[in-house]
Length: 255
Image 1: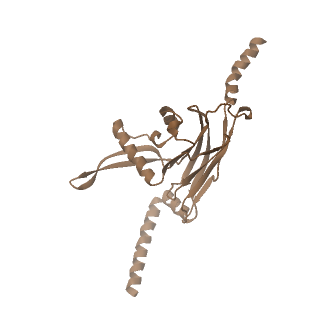
Image 2: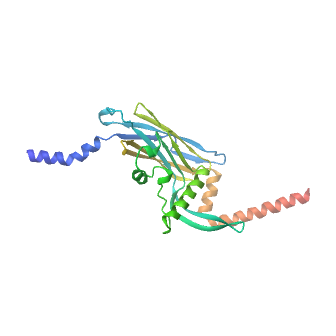
Image 3: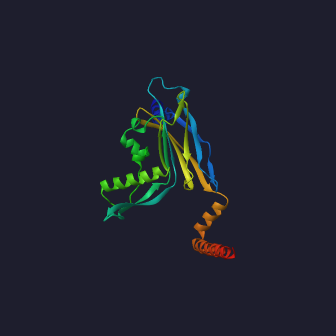
């Protein structure tokens, strides 16, 4: 009987250890965002609670940190590098990335580089310098780094890549919240809001919530038409352009 009990405890020990870890209960203020002609952006509130084993807070003074990452759907991106030749700017090189996030925003209670080491940041893609962009060629690492810096800079200037250290507020070591701005030029698709609980340089818990951003009304009709019937959409666009040009010329002649 003693051996069987010991064996049962051995089998259950991983489960007991798993239950001894904190659990994140996250949520977002908007699960669905509709883009219409008047869309100027949105502000997401990401909030939640940290559930500790037995409801007891850590007894020591070591801080508990929270990092929130909002990612858009991945896309293939071609980056071109320009070089000045004989006074003219020409394309000197290019590099394609197979899976660059179309949108990336990270908010944290403290700067991420102070929370975890470089390896952990790379595993969880915590920070713009830790994104795994999957280049489509075997270019030298120096060249890849140069193109990646260029891609991140372009996305950052467009408001699509954002870093906000100290933007996560933690109340009584239990409740947290952060705000992330969604720009007007955001792409549509399925977004994810990932929350990480970090302590002593380790990720103790993680949770994900989905966010759908889609076009609505006439914008949705145009987008679906362009996607499903690209040839007919192109011919219609050309016909409308010709018709509008002819109408403008007719009005000019009449006046």
